[in-house]
Amino acid sequence: MTAPTWPSTAAEAIAVQEELRGLVDPTDTAGPPRSVAGLDVAYDGDRLAAAVVVLDWETLGEVERAVVLGATTFPYVPGLFAFREVPALLTALEQLTITPDLLICDGQGLAHPRRFGLACHLGVLTGIPSIGAAKTAFVGSHDDLARERGATADLVDNGEVVGAALRTQAGVKPVYVSVGHRVTLPSAVDHVLHLAPRYRLPETTRAADHACREGLRDG
Image (cartoon, rainbow, N blue to C red; front, top):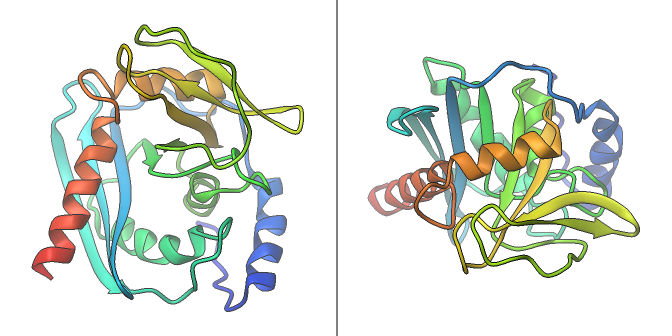
């Protein structure tokens, strides 16, 4: 794992992003996943709960989970959200007894102003293939999608394809998929669609969202 640097100012954080983004590998470097982890963080003021829930790739049944309680150590700054979440998520990942083959982050990967969102950050630091699957687009725009499940449209920012809008269920709002690390965009889209057989959001995201909210409530 690459040794993380935790900055205290926005300028320092941007410098870290600029330094690490050159390490992102947007190619498929791993075989088919057998386990996949959803990652999410819930907040109550300065309190937070970070959850990692590992699912079996085939059955989507839960294999393991880790929830870490803590406090925010970095202010909310658009484009620097990873610095609020990555430290606690890394701690949660370290508590697992297995290493997941794929990380699905509730956030952006390359679809970020500096092409280094949360999924890229976690992927580079852990070396685990990672994908951003966000509820909303942070940068870029896309053409209208067809209504059927599996319809996609390129997410384009300043002339560059940075991700894809993916309709995971017929007629629902799309999910915004982008490369994090060690995966191509077509593979990322296929993976997210596989993980969303019934609902708009992938099962990984749903499970992690529930786990971190539960952890914050019970903590």
